[in-house]
Length: 469
Image 1 (cartoon, one colour):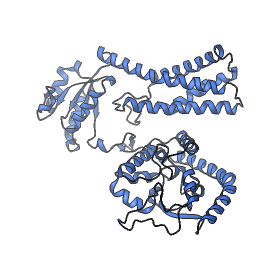
Image 2 (spheres, rainbow, N blue to C red; image 1 turned 30 degrees about the vertical axis):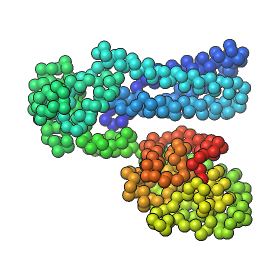
Image 3 (tube, one colour; image 1 turned 60 degrees about the vertical axis):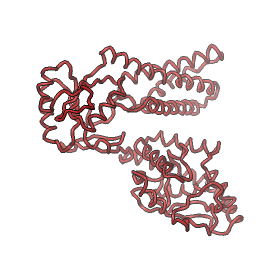
Image 4 (spheres, rainbow, N blue to C red; image 1 turned 180 degrees about the vertical axis):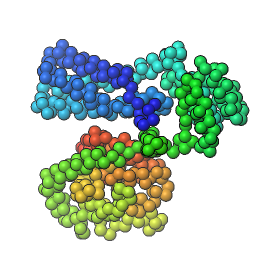
C-alpha cells in the first residue's frame, strides 16, 4: 500500500464494473429496439463514456483489497450511491439534450440492470477471491510479531476476511500464550532465524507491539529489511484512527491524520462556498422574495410576536452564530424545562407550536430564512444541523466525538436528516446516531453527495417526513 494514500485503486475491479455498465447500457438499447420497437439516437451513445467517467469518480476509493474490513452490506451501500449518481447523469443528459422520448423506459431498464449486475459482479468477484485463496494462488502468509491485544484483534480480522487472501502462519512473542492455539512460534528475538529457515512460508511480517517498544520495533524492521519479506506496522493507537485516515510525509516526518476531511482543502471549500452563494441567491431572489411576505402575514394574523425567531447556535469551530427561522412557537414558550433544567426539543403535538408553525415545521418552510445565513457565510446549504447552545452543552458531555460535527459549517439540511434523524433526539442513542451520520458526511464529502442530499431533502418534503414536527 502506498503510504501517501489511504486508498488504492484496483484497475481490474474498475474494468469489471465498466464492462457491467457497458453491458447494461447495450442491453437497455437492445430491449428498447426489439421489445418496444424504438431506439436511441446515435448521439446518445456519447452518454456511455460520460456514465463510465461518472462511475469512476463515484466509486474511486471503493476498490481497495488490502485489509478491508467493510462488510458486504456496506459495500452494497456504496454501490447504491454510485447507481444513484448514474440515475442523475442519465436524467441530466436527456434533459440537457432536450429529449424526453424513451427517456423513462431507458432509465428504468438501465438502472434496473445495473441494480442486478453490479451486486452480482461483487458476489462473483468475492467468490473468485475465495477460490483463489483456497487453491493457494491468491494466498499471502503473514507472521505476526506480538501476541497482545493488538495482534490478536488483527488476527481475528484476517480470519473473518479470508477472501482478502491472507493466512496467519503464527505469532512471535516474548511470552507463550495458550490463547494462540498452537500458533506460538517462539520469542521475538528469534525472528531472524525463523524467517531464514522458513523463507517460503512468510510473505509479510506484521508488527503489533506497543509504542513503548520503539527500539525493538526498529530492530525488527532492520532484520526484516534483510529478507525478501514485506513489513507492516500496526500503530498501537489504531483504535483512535477513523476509517477515513490519511498518511503523509512532512519534511521526512511520517504523520497520521486520524480523520480525513475533504473540506479541509481550500479548493474544495471554495467550490462548496461558490455553490452556496449561487444556490442561496437563487432561493432568496426567486422564492423567498414572494414567499416571505405571505408567511409573515400568516404568522402575524395567528399569533402575537415577531415574524422571525433568532437563536444562538454553534457553527464551524464552535463559533456562535445567530440562526434565523420563522417563528413557529408562541412567544411565551420556554426553551428550558423548569423541572430538570434541560433543553426542551420540539416534539410531536408540542403545545408550544402554533397552528401556522406546525405547517411551517412540517413543510420545512420555517428554515427558509437560514438561506440568509448561507448567503452571509456562517452556514451552508448542506452540513450538520446547528443545535442551540444549551443542547450543544448537554450533548458534548455525553456523546463521544460530538464536537467533531463542528469541523465544518452547519447546514440547512444534512446527511443525518435525509437518513431519518431529523427532529427530536429524545434518547442519547438517537443523538449518537445523528452525530455518526454527521461525521460520516464530514469524512466522505463530495459535491455530488451535497446534490444528492438536496434532492433527497426535496423528495422527503414532497412525500412527507414522519420526523418533521
